[in-house]
Image 1 (tube, rainbow, N blue to C red):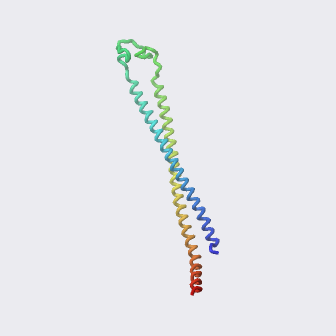
Image 2 (cartoon, rainbow, N blue to C red):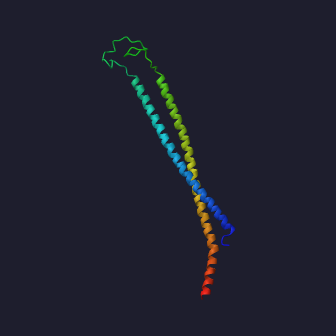
Image 3 (spheres, rainbow, N blue to C red):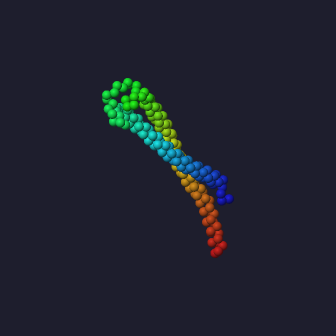
Length: 175
């Protein structure tokens, strides 16, 4: 027989290696897509965090503004006797507590910071998996090349002498 058991085993190993190579390439594609999604989501959360910090900063800067004249009727507010718990403009009880908006803003900042930390861990894990998958792909590609070369050498080793003998016999018969 032209193919012996060892060549058949090599072909089976080659088929398994090619299947593993295809799986490794599919995994790389999936991990690359996942890495892109995590990176995009991380950028969005970072933008939200930056926007929230800018809003918080602007709120703190605007909170320090004290009206000297009424923005509606332009009357002076400096001559009024206003209790500390009321609004200087409308004289109604002031519902704004100084620490509540800051605490709420801090809570959101902490939540977004925690999300960023978690996303960084996910990105690191996906990056490590991607590196391992790329290494596995390279190893499997090398195995496919080695098995292909081995099979080619075995086939050439077994078929070439037989073909040469057939060619010699055909030449003798023709002569």
